Image (cartoon, rainbow, N blue to C red; front, top):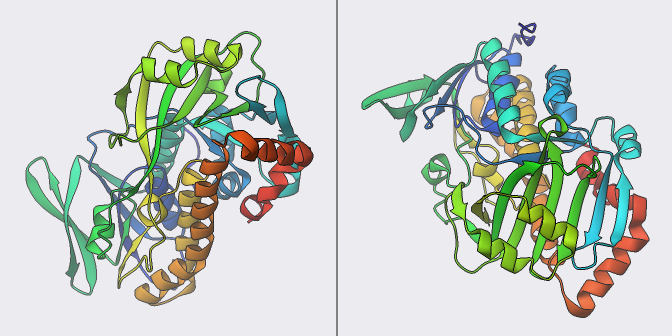
Length: 395
């Protein structure tokens, strides 16, 4: 059994208890961060068991640095893969457009680039949260957020019983279709990006190097990288679609994937052909919100700033939120002031990343003369490609 995660109680806290709605990566990271600060934490999660569906995700230095601060980097590295490079290729010809080694960037930004299976990361965070003393209630479906005795409470339906979890603050980490966000008056639906992601996990080809590969083409692109200690290869094929898919793990039509990539190079077609089946989900984000907090309630992760995956920052920004919220709680004596401070510290950065991710979604799928211009820029950037996003990784 690993040593429990240390936490450092503070003599003055803006909140001594918190209820977090949502047990995903952002919610669990928030639970750990607050618990380390000395806050009593209750997580309520609608799923009956913690199971992060999906496949892989990329963790950039801005996220792994925080997980190291949590004392979790060694445990993360035991289940993650540290790829050697990012290789961006022309999907039609297979030719490399640009290549950036991660080693130098890891040194510059002071923390590693890692790729990991979502389930492995969520399990790690859940174990760490439990070790730190976080209470996690599963099968708890939020029905209401209410003021209570100078604090706030989450009313959940758990096994047919209505149970109220009261605390000094409530954090909505309940995803892109957040009920807590709606409670704060933000009722606009998520924005469908007219893109659908088809994902699969396959055996790693014998000659596949330890790297992240990004294949670009007209109206589609493919990302491939190893997970599960290098034993499996995570594939995510993004295709232009007009019909939205709301579910995270809907069955995907293999024929649609193969048709979208029919004219691509043999390596891409071979990778996709090795998948026995695909799951798919529609890509959604939300427009930047005018406010995240109201009184003793705030938002975190996708509930606050759901973003497209074209900068690999969805999970990382939820982890950043967690650390920022804990800092605010330990730096103020008033709960509402702490939550407003947290919101002010995070809003501009996450809104910029949302915009940049939307832009990348367009750039990745260019055709004709704009594609040639994009490829020329990529070739000129070369190893400096990663430094273009130093404003993200270096924070």
